[in-house]
Amino acid sequence: MRDRRVLVTAAASGLAAGIAATLPPDGFSHVAITFRDTPPDATLAAIRQHSACATAHRIDFSAPREVTSRALHDAVRVDGPFDTLVHAAGPIVVKRFAQLTDAESWEMLSANLESAILVARAVLPSMRERGFGRLVFFGANGSSETRPAVGFSVYGAAKSGVTAFARTLAMEEAKFGITVNVIEVGDIREKTMTREHASARSARNPRGRPGSFEDVADVVRFLVAPARDFVTGAVIAVNGGLFVADERNAPTS
Image (cartoon, rainbow, N blue to C red; front, top):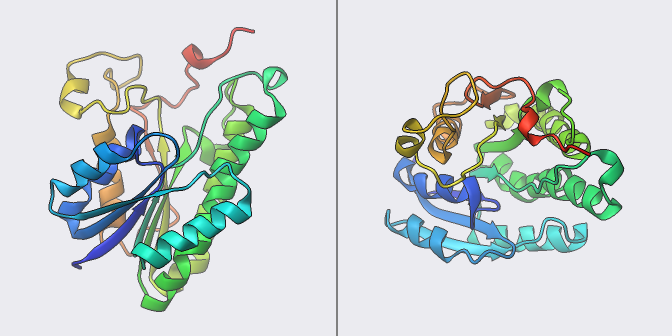
Protein backbone atom coordinates (compact mmCIF):
# COMPACT_ATOMS: atom_id res chain seq x y z
CA MET A 1 0.00 0.00 0.00
CA ARG A 2 1.15 3.51 -0.82
CA ASP A 3 0.04 6.94 0.30
CA ARG A 4 -0.92 5.69 3.74
CA ARG A 5 -1.94 8.12 6.47
CA VAL A 6 -1.17 7.65 10.14
CA LEU A 7 -2.08 9.54 13.30
CA VAL A 8 0.49 9.30 16.11
CA THR A 9 -0.60 10.80 19.41
CA ALA A 10 1.67 12.61 21.88
CA ALA A 11 4.51 12.65 19.36
CA ALA A 12 6.11 16.03 20.00
CA SER A 13 8.52 14.30 22.39
CA GLY A 14 9.21 10.98 24.05
CA LEU A 15 9.04 7.56 22.42
CA ALA A 16 6.28 8.58 20.03
CA ALA A 17 8.43 11.31 18.47
CA GLY A 18 11.05 8.80 17.39
CA ILE A 19 8.42 6.30 16.28
CA ALA A 20 6.62 8.83 14.08
CA ALA A 21 9.81 9.58 12.18
CA THR A 22 10.40 5.89 11.37
CA LEU A 23 7.06 5.39 9.60
CA PRO A 24 7.40 7.21 6.22
CA PRO A 25 9.67 4.56 4.64
CA ASP A 26 6.88 2.01 5.14
CA GLY A 27 4.56 3.78 2.73
CA PHE A 28 3.20 6.53 4.93
CA SER A 29 3.05 9.66 2.81
CA HIS A 30 1.33 11.66 5.57
CA VAL A 31 2.17 11.48 9.28
CA ALA A 32 -0.05 13.56 11.53
CA ILE A 33 0.85 13.94 15.19
CA THR A 34 -0.79 15.40 18.26
CA PHE A 35 0.92 17.49 20.90
CA ARG A 36 -0.05 19.38 24.03
CA ASP A 37 2.64 21.72 25.41
CA THR A 38 5.92 20.69 23.78
CA PRO A 39 6.36 22.35 20.36
CA PRO A 40 6.10 19.73 17.58
CA ASP A 41 8.66 21.32 15.24
CA ALA A 42 11.48 18.84 15.81
CA THR A 43 9.27 15.82 15.15
CA LEU A 44 7.76 17.40 12.05
CA ALA A 45 11.22 18.14 10.70
CA ALA A 46 12.34 14.55 11.31
CA ILE A 47 9.31 13.22 9.44
CA ARG A 48 9.83 15.59 6.52
CA GLN A 49 13.40 14.39 6.09
CA HIS A 50 11.80 11.30 4.52
CA SER A 51 9.84 13.45 2.02
CA ALA A 52 6.57 12.77 3.82
CA CYS A 53 3.91 15.31 4.65
CA ALA A 54 3.86 16.10 8.38
CA THR A 55 1.20 17.99 10.31
CA ALA A 56 0.46 18.62 13.97
CA HIS A 57 -2.71 19.12 15.99
CA ARG A 58 -2.78 20.49 19.51
CA ILE A 59 -4.93 18.07 21.51
CA ASP A 60 -5.06 17.91 25.30
CA PHE A 61 -6.26 14.43 26.23
CA SER A 62 -6.92 15.55 29.81
CA ALA A 63 -9.37 18.23 28.64
CA PRO A 64 -13.15 17.70 28.92
CA ARG A 65 -14.19 14.85 26.64
CA GLU A 66 -16.30 17.09 24.41
CA VAL A 67 -13.27 19.29 23.71
CA THR A 68 -10.98 16.33 23.06
CA SER A 69 -13.51 14.58 20.85
CA ARG A 70 -14.08 17.67 18.75
CA ALA A 71 -10.33 18.20 18.29
CA LEU A 72 -9.83 14.58 17.21
CA HIS A 73 -12.66 14.71 14.69
CA ASP A 74 -11.23 17.97 13.33
CA ALA A 75 -7.87 16.26 12.85
CA VAL A 76 -9.51 13.41 10.95
CA ARG A 77 -11.48 15.86 8.82
CA VAL A 78 -8.41 17.96 7.98
CA ASP A 79 -5.70 15.31 7.54
CA GLY A 80 -7.57 12.02 7.29
CA PRO A 81 -8.92 9.60 6.62
CA PHE A 82 -6.28 7.69 8.55
CA ASP A 83 -5.70 4.00 7.90
CA THR A 84 -3.37 3.71 10.93
CA LEU A 85 -3.40 4.92 14.53
CA VAL A 86 -0.53 4.76 17.02
CA HIS A 87 -1.94 5.93 20.34
CA ALA A 88 0.99 6.72 22.62
CA ALA A 89 -0.62 9.39 24.81
CA GLY A 90 -0.76 8.68 28.52
CA PRO A 91 0.66 10.64 31.44
CA ILE A 92 2.05 8.87 34.47
CA VAL A 93 2.41 9.95 38.10
CA VAL A 94 4.29 7.50 40.32
CA LYS A 95 2.96 7.85 43.86
CA ARG A 96 1.37 5.63 46.44
CA PHE A 97 -2.41 5.94 46.30
CA ALA A 98 -2.52 7.79 49.64
CA GLN A 99 -0.39 10.60 48.16
CA LEU A 100 -2.20 10.87 44.80
CA THR A 101 -4.51 13.84 44.39
CA ASP A 102 -7.91 13.53 42.75
CA ALA A 103 -6.67 15.73 39.92
CA GLU A 104 -3.67 13.48 39.26
CA SER A 105 -5.84 10.37 39.39
CA TRP A 106 -8.49 11.63 37.01
CA GLU A 107 -5.92 12.99 34.57
CA MET A 108 -4.30 9.57 34.35
CA LEU A 109 -7.67 7.91 33.81
CA SER A 110 -8.88 10.38 31.22
CA ALA A 111 -5.63 10.84 29.29
CA ASN A 112 -4.89 7.10 29.21
CA LEU A 113 -8.17 5.18 29.09
CA GLU A 114 -10.76 7.71 28.00
CA SER A 115 -8.43 9.06 25.32
CA ALA A 116 -8.15 5.59 23.79
CA ILE A 117 -11.92 5.40 23.48
CA LEU A 118 -12.23 8.88 21.99
CA VAL A 119 -9.47 8.44 19.41
CA ALA A 120 -10.86 5.06 18.35
CA ARG A 121 -14.28 6.63 17.77
CA ALA A 122 -12.66 9.30 15.62
CA VAL A 123 -10.63 7.07 13.30
CA LEU A 124 -12.65 3.85 13.03
CA PRO A 125 -15.57 4.94 10.80
CA SER A 126 -13.39 5.61 7.76
CA MET A 127 -11.40 2.41 8.39
CA ARG A 128 -14.60 0.37 8.41
CA GLU A 129 -15.72 2.03 5.21
CA ARG A 130 -12.40 1.28 3.53
CA GLY A 131 -12.15 -2.25 4.88
CA PHE A 132 -8.67 -1.73 6.27
CA GLY A 133 -7.17 -0.35 9.47
CA ARG A 134 -4.31 -0.74 11.91
CA LEU A 135 -4.59 0.41 15.53
CA VAL A 136 -1.76 0.17 18.05
CA PHE A 137 -2.28 1.15 21.68
CA PHE A 138 0.34 1.48 24.37
CA GLY A 139 -0.12 -0.47 27.57
CA ALA A 140 2.29 -0.71 30.49
CA ASN A 141 4.51 -3.52 31.68
CA GLY A 142 2.13 -6.23 32.91
CA SER A 143 -1.09 -4.39 32.04
CA SER A 144 -2.55 -7.45 30.34
CA GLU A 145 -2.26 -9.34 33.64
CA THR A 146 -3.17 -6.45 35.96
CA ARG A 147 0.27 -6.98 37.48
CA PRO A 148 0.61 -4.81 40.62
CA ALA A 149 3.47 -2.42 41.31
CA VAL A 150 3.83 -0.02 44.22
CA GLY A 151 3.11 3.56 43.14
CA PHE A 152 1.20 2.59 40.00
CA SER A 153 -2.32 2.01 41.32
CA VAL A 154 -4.27 4.38 39.08
CA TYR A 155 -1.85 4.34 36.15
CA GLY A 156 -1.83 0.55 36.17
CA ALA A 157 -5.62 0.45 36.34
CA ALA A 158 -5.87 2.85 33.39
CA LYS A 159 -3.42 0.90 31.24
CA SER A 160 -5.08 -2.41 32.07
CA GLY A 161 -8.32 -0.79 30.94
CA VAL A 162 -6.69 0.29 27.68
CA THR A 163 -5.49 -3.26 27.10
CA ALA A 164 -8.92 -4.79 27.77
CA PHE A 165 -10.56 -2.20 25.52
CA ALA A 166 -8.11 -2.80 22.67
CA ARG A 167 -8.34 -6.58 22.78
CA THR A 168 -12.13 -6.50 22.74
CA LEU A 169 -12.04 -3.96 19.92
CA ALA A 170 -9.84 -6.39 18.00
CA MET A 171 -12.60 -9.00 18.10
CA GLU A 172 -15.33 -6.59 17.09
CA GLU A 173 -13.47 -4.89 14.23
CA ALA A 174 -11.72 -7.89 12.66
CA LYS A 175 -14.51 -8.44 10.12
CA PHE A 176 -13.77 -4.99 8.69
CA GLY A 177 -10.13 -5.80 8.00
CA ILE A 178 -9.02 -3.82 11.05
CA THR A 179 -6.40 -5.08 13.49
CA VAL A 180 -5.97 -3.80 17.03
CA ASN A 181 -2.90 -4.62 19.09
CA VAL A 182 -1.15 -3.48 22.27
CA ILE A 183 2.50 -2.86 23.04
CA GLU A 184 3.48 -3.14 26.69
CA VAL A 185 6.35 -0.70 26.97
CA GLY A 186 8.87 -1.50 29.68
CA ASP A 187 11.11 0.76 31.74
CA ILE A 188 12.55 2.92 28.96
CA ARG A 189 13.79 6.05 30.68
CA GLU A 190 15.73 7.90 28.01
CA LYS A 191 13.10 8.23 25.32
CA THR A 192 15.33 9.53 22.52
CA MET A 193 18.12 6.99 22.90
CA THR A 194 18.94 4.96 19.79
CA ARG A 195 19.56 1.24 19.88
CA GLU A 196 23.22 1.82 19.05
CA HIS A 197 23.71 4.00 22.10
CA ALA A 198 21.61 1.70 24.28
CA SER A 199 23.73 -1.28 23.28
CA ALA A 200 26.81 0.43 24.71
CA ARG A 201 25.22 0.88 28.14
CA SER A 202 24.04 -1.40 30.91
CA ALA A 203 20.71 -1.67 32.69
CA ARG A 204 19.15 -3.79 35.40
CA ASN A 205 17.02 -6.02 33.23
CA PRO A 206 17.63 -9.55 31.90
CA ARG A 207 18.81 -8.24 28.51
CA GLY A 208 21.32 -6.05 30.30
CA ARG A 209 20.92 -2.84 28.29
CA PRO A 210 18.41 0.03 28.26
CA GLY A 211 15.54 0.06 25.83
CA SER A 212 15.35 2.55 22.97
CA PHE A 213 12.65 4.16 20.88
CA GLU A 214 13.84 2.02 17.99
CA ASP A 215 13.01 -1.15 19.93
CA VAL A 216 9.42 0.01 20.25
CA ALA A 217 9.29 1.40 16.71
CA ASP A 218 10.27 -2.00 15.30
CA VAL A 219 7.20 -3.58 16.87
CA VAL A 220 4.93 -0.74 15.75
CA ARG A 221 6.15 -1.09 12.16
CA PHE A 222 5.58 -4.84 12.29
CA LEU A 223 2.04 -4.49 13.57
CA VAL A 224 0.89 -1.79 11.15
CA ALA A 225 2.15 -3.50 8.00
CA PRO A 226 -0.62 -4.47 5.54
CA ALA A 227 0.52 -8.10 5.67
CA ARG A 228 -0.17 -8.31 9.42
CA ASP A 229 -3.91 -8.92 8.92
CA PHE A 230 -3.80 -12.14 10.99
CA VAL A 231 -2.16 -10.56 14.03
CA THR A 232 -4.84 -8.88 16.12
CA GLY A 233 -5.69 -8.76 19.80
CA ALA A 234 -2.04 -9.39 20.59
CA VAL A 235 -0.11 -7.92 23.50
CA ILE A 236 3.62 -7.64 22.86
CA ALA A 237 6.00 -6.76 25.67
CA VAL A 238 9.02 -4.60 24.80
CA ASN A 239 10.81 -4.65 28.13
CA GLY A 240 14.18 -6.41 27.85
CA GLY A 241 12.74 -9.34 29.80
CA LEU A 242 11.91 -7.24 32.88
CA PHE A 243 8.57 -8.76 33.88
CA VAL A 244 8.87 -8.10 37.63
CA ALA A 245 8.10 -4.63 38.99
CA ASP A 246 11.27 -2.56 39.16
CA GLU A 247 11.73 -1.39 42.74
CA ARG A 248 13.64 1.69 41.56
CA ASN A 249 10.26 3.14 40.63
CA ALA A 250 8.53 2.52 43.94
CA PRO A 251 7.95 5.58 46.15
CA THR A 252 9.58 5.32 49.55
CA SER A 253 6.74 6.97 51.45
